[in-house]
Image: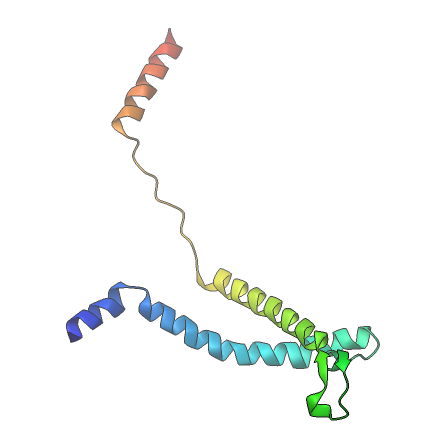
Length: 125
């Protein structure tokens, strides 16, 4: 049983997936801070000092701040920006880490060799 588990981890992508998830979770905190503390303040400043987290459309004001029924589109916008930043960071890390090697040249099949010889002999005549 232990041998099968070890084979599963080493011969499948389970270990790579687990490492990716752990790194992704750790990277999530960094990206959250990047979006919240670095990217959104200049964008808000350009838009006149708007705090995106407070942008909302109030549907029903109950008088209590905690029970207001509202569409919080500012938080949604912030989440969209965060998604794009995460996607960009993952793409950038992928480009840095994953280096695809060009495929090795393959030997042509026997049919291709024969057709090449026929073509060459027809071109000579």
